[in-house]
Length: 273
Image: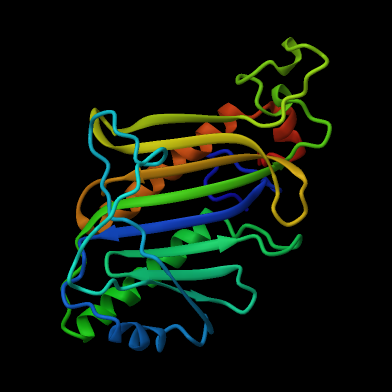
């Protein structure tokens, strides 16, 4: 069943990873001790735990700054210890939820050939549930209310190259056949940045990158098509969070279909019902 009949939909999309993130003002007094208490609410569904460095807090603003690529390294000095980003994962490590003091993330990752993307409607419901659970946890421990300042969604697609030319997959990007026959394109990377608007108002950006690479686990040549959408809440704090996620998803879907070819849409079994 399709999420939304107005949106492009494919039965076998080339997605390998999706992440939906709610970023908020850092929760004061949220220390590492709360992480163990929080896991108590999740360990039945997510029994595996890892910790990572926290994702840097940033908010999209008008201007030409591209925060998705080519950002210089930054060093922060603080007398307070860094609270890590915690990942709670299911047994297959295909679904997980992540927390840090200013962010909640829900992820799906393709962990086997049989692993199917659960669709946006399912992931939207999932982060809505985890968000409500997290807010209840904060309330139970007399911590500050969540003040959301940005939503972020990442979609990563792996498209196996095989015998396909670039123009067969991305017909509007690059004519590889115009180059000399005695050279073969080994790698490339293209980046796009689009402003996202709600009406006439700037609310965020959509970052698109396309590159030719080799898949780590088997060395197969692939085209990696990645979308990162970042958007301010569109409306009030309650409804605006999910309206922003819907807006990002709408623009990712539209961009995916515009960039890729009709031939590939048929290969991925576009659902027109």
